[in-house]
Length: 404
Length: 87
Image (cartoon, rainbow over all chains, first blue to last red):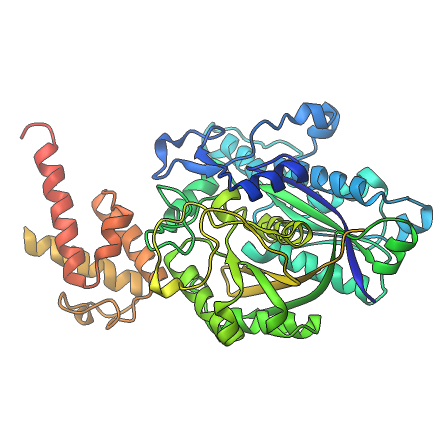
């Protein structure tokens, strides 16, 4: 069964909805700035990709917000936009069978931190009773389910920086196999809280500057936050109900490096890309664009370049590759879904988003990385790469559909 | 004094990497001791704790040998000594 993407919802550092997000991607706007929500005085870095201008009380009732960590709010907001765009017509039967698959790396740990702060810092003997429901990683999926009365299969995947790519892949397979008639899938993340930032600082992979993927002077990743959700459904069902697919989801591949807990492997990444191409029934030459994992760490960008060359051979010199993390930052468990959205919008609009902040070529990253400016180019199909700490890789394949 | 500091550094590396103290020789590279990127993080963290110092990311990246680490730590301790009150 062919699978259509009929809705996209986004909240990110470069836009609070799909339209703003796409406008920023095509104009190469960078959302990386000094952090506002957390005091950077005790941190070795100060720049993050923070969601700005979002006012929770304009989107949710105070009674709802009491039960929702920021990451769960992002999940619901993105799902809301995607469902609206897809013009989903809810019936009791559809609600009973629709799937929700979300991804998150850290879940609601900022709420957990707030609870533990009471114990460790203020010497209190109790934590807030909602600490568990706020912080559980499946809260995003649960709140989407409750908001819409969706009662079908719902679960959350946590595979670090591949979380929402794995979530989308699982949802895609469920729709393709006919086991569910509709799926809402993606991910969300809100990792910009003090303890989380200190933990990333200790990894010594966060840039004190900005995110410069594939550039010789790259200095590490920039943490981001946000969420993105897609609505997936059978292609012919979408057409029959008069909804024009935005893109076709064609394939999903995953692999495990079975190597090192933090160092990436080009073989593992290549394995996942080959699996996605095979699942999609695509020849490597049909891929015109890859939205790279592209974290701007020394190790990832070099390894990812080698893996793309291993999979695509001579075609690696023809296809275009960019890392939109240079604009929306690395939103960890939400990254795969944000980048899937970027890939779909690129295919849809015939414009490939750039790798911004690029200043100098690195011989170890010798791909066409669309430096600094978007490129008007229609391509047939694209991949979105996600490679996680722990060596767990997920690659998604999408195909452009003609606008009617 | 310098030898005492060197000994403390070698001991931290040996404990952090779980290898015999005698195997941690200053002229060896990280590679020769099979110290990978994550081991380096652990060692830097343990050294920061041992000496109550802060090791800069960029400076740390330049180190390839145990002797580089020893020189870097000694330099940090000297800077602290000079800037401490009473000197």
